Image (cartoon, rainbow, N blue to C red; front, side, top):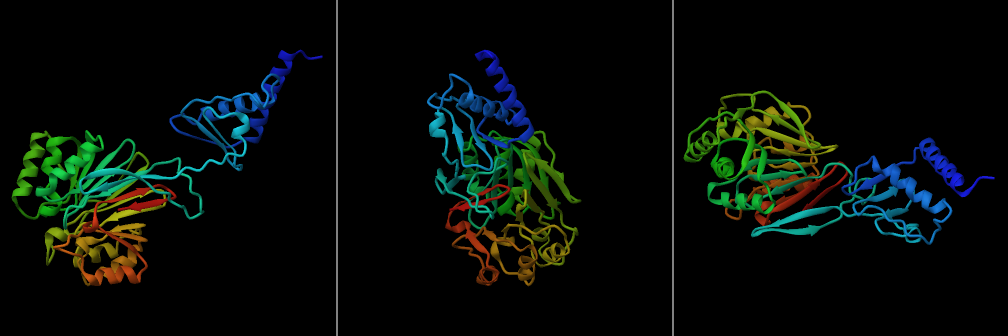
Length: 369
């Protein structure tokens, strides 16, 4: 006859072999690492089955751990008893930061994936903030460990962008991407360089001169940096997000060289993506219509929503579900562009209505304004 200790040991061995054989899938959320899931599951099962660990005993897990056995509705959370744990369903809504004109405030919305699952993806969450900055582009892209700025708006509104970074606790910007050198895209660049550490600056070529560009170049020199002019398609991955930068294909355009020299940036999290089209006009849009891989879930509409003969063809080509237009009350988007987007079934947001917060995961997109 086995004594109680031997019985305990045999049950533990049995549990280990059972879990190893069945390869019970588990998900761990919170700060706990995935390798802890197996041990937590074994402890829970052991406390249910071993002598002296009846169903009325409390099963205490680490504070930062939630374990869900996939394929069931049972969730075990910190401090939950085995009785209360059984039958508890784990459903976590996705969270976004909704920014306002005076700053930011916390908001929560639930995103629903194509499969109908409302749980937050265990992978990367990218938050894109489209600042209300007039008819100007200023975007901040953040994950847990990475910050990118795409364009910096007008110089007169640069403090608003800097204040937003401070509110978010940002002390380093990993990349600053300047799509082109018009004042409504490069105007705040010197303020960013003066206020926070910047890792890399990606730009297009300079086709003009201005006070804003001179201030940017002076701040770049003061920071001991040089810009990286993108002349070939550049792609890199950072914290689960893929960035692809498409440079202009010509150095001289028949019209609007500065706008048509815009870098176009695609940012992807799994199958979801956002395409930033700068101020691309007719000639640049024609180039993009011959460029593969530009399909996107969200489109930053080129040139503040102003109509171009290639606008409809471009929107049809990239086929977005959502669109963002950086416009203002004094410089609104063209109605022709709004009609094209509406006819294509695209849900459109305007920064003139307020700052826009976008949360992107592999399975969900949540947009709040």
